[in-house]
Amino acid sequence: MSSLSARLASVVDALPLRPDMRVLEIGGGPGAAAKAVATRIRQGHILMIDRSAKSAALATSSAAEEIAAGRMSVRHVAVEDFVLAEGEVPFDLAFGIRVGALDGRHPELTAIALQRIADALTPEGRLFIDGGDPLREIRLPQRSAPASR
Image (cartoon, rainbow, N blue to C red):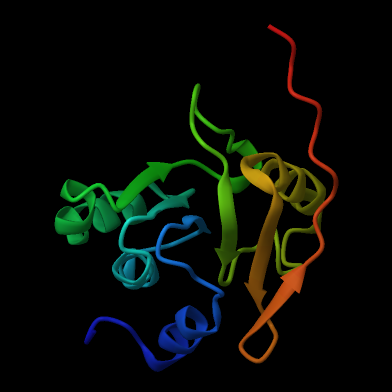
């Protein structure tokens, strides 16, 4: 995959991916890592979110094949505002590289971002961010109780 840098390739290689997995990428930028994950999870699905409308549009355009195949989708939303859509199945794994709300650059957003991620994952879901070798796993808070309808 020529569009994937060596750094992002090492991140994707380090993720504990399975072929049927649902993956959430936070802050995916132009979508290079999400496209690589989509290739590896075959029958699974990756949702890439990004707070930048420009990045979300670029990822949508560059991943047209993966999106058409149903292996990938893109949403323009900040992690601290992210919630599962009505009826959306929770994710098995989440990852984010250079996400300010997760790496200490925006500590005022960290708690809400971690809660939003926890609420979007299955009870066994895991979160990985950069800062390890190449990744480190972040402990998530307990999921919020679902709102009664």
